Amino acid sequence: MENFRVLIVDDELDFLETILIRLQRRNVDAVGVSSGKMAIEMIEREHFDVAILDVRMPGIDGFETLREIKKRRPFMEVIMLTGHGSVESGIQGMQMGAFDYVLKPVKIDDLLDRVRKAFERKAIHEKKSGR
Amino acid sequence: MAENANKLTDRIHYILPYLPGVLTIVIALPVWFAAGPILGILAGVLGMGCTLTCHRILVRVREISDQKACLDAQLIQSQKLAAIGELSSGIAHEINNPLAIIGQEVQWIRHIVDKAAIGSEHHAELDESVTEIGKQVKRCAEITHKLLDFARKRDPLIQGCDVNRLIEDMVRLVERETAQKNIAIVRNYHEGLPELYTDHPLLRQVILNLLNNATYAIDKDGTITVKTLRKGQDALEILITDTGCGITSENIRKVFNPFFTTKPPGKGTGLGLSLCHSIIHKLGGDIRVESEPGKGATFIIRLPMNYAEGENLI
Image (cartoon, rainbow over all chains, first blue to last red; front, top):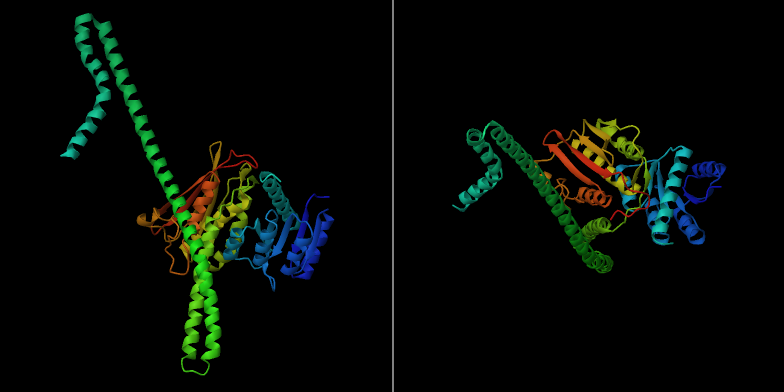
């Protein structure tokens, strides 16, 4: 088992399902939800290390979810995942504190690599802040 | 007069250090006649050696003082940027509250207008005017938010990084937009670079900003070249070159200043490059630009390679 927990947020249920199964098959403790609102409720209830957020979602979109997550869990790292990436939104994501900005489609092992790096960053961050 | 006197003292200072050596060469001949060839030759060789050494030292001193002048200029530049950054975030902070109040009042006015003026001949005009105020308030709020983002102190978190891969990610993102504008991106990555210890999201932000600027400078039909290379044992460089409009010599000194932009009003805040500058400095490196107007520009980032994981840079 990998020693981190991942929250995946995407309104495309097929995609969410596939990515969850693939991560779980690689021994990652992953949970999926289908909206920004559910994501925010989820992180209030449970502990996660890294979130993978779809940028474009109805209701609370990826950026807003990112902002809310960073407000509530400043140590949690966020990877933005998007099918319609633009430079502008990439810059915005990084500026708002996302760890990475990844274009769909992405190979699952590549994504997992990025999750590991994000988790490493979280660990360094916590160590530095004396937690 | 004073200038002439200054020039004269400069010249004397320039010549003076050579005097002992030259004098020794000059007296070599009388010494030869008075005390024989051995001492004469000795005096000559001594004099020449002395002059040569003196010359070498002077050249070195001049090099060092040039370097110092350059470093001083860099230091002043980054202090200036830091000061402007601090000032502008202070202003942004102060303006934010009144701005929020104006925004709320606009909503209130709209409420009253709708109630009181419906049917009146001025209703449409009032409505339009209030909408415009709301729009402009929103625009100001966006600018102040960007400024506060800009000034937020985010300490770098250092971890191992495959620089080429990080850059390639950003290039691919930009490529989606450049492809439509007939802009080619040429990759010239130095293979087998060792891991760089740096802050991933901060570096991504810089690369993305520079690629975005390059695209803007070209507009359409051109080439962006992205290059990585090793500089000695403990540094690497990232070069981003475009074939765009270039930067005039007058503007090149100002490109890293906050609020400096050549984009039309409302298109850019002029914070992108100054953000890049402050990030790269936080990462212990430096960034500079070379440009020939009309032929494009190259942004050169130099980053140190000798940091360890989790280490504090500043």
